[in-house]
Image (cartoon, rainbow, N blue to C red; front, side, top):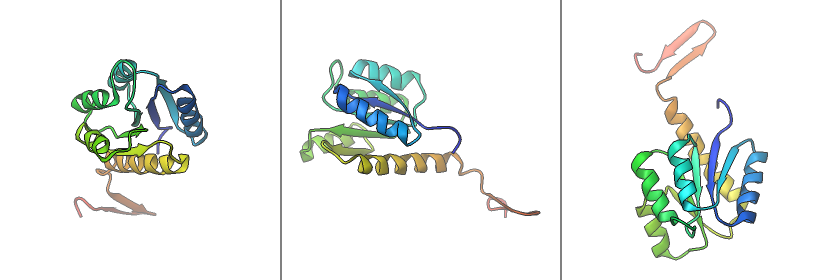
Length: 146
């Protein structure tokens, strides 16, 4: 993968946001934190992120509204909702607004990291799908053209 992947953390709890950010940075990710929905939406729409971690209970705009707006402009960016709202109805609404995944607080950081890596790998692979050339020494096989 070229360069580190950028993750936007939209979370109003300073301690949680800093802990997630620190953990992700230790794993080689770049992070940016927004502490309310309006700033989070602005950052998401005007910057290139590889993934968004999005709380639901935010000042300004709630996570559902942020997710819905991001989906209109950037439909392919992975969004993982992180929230204390664990009822089935909350999860369904999150998915209906465009979330790709939903993790209920408190969560284990290792599980969050595993979910992030799935989306990062999936998006990285799809970016390179058109490079289906296998090279070994002086032999080259293009799986597209055979």
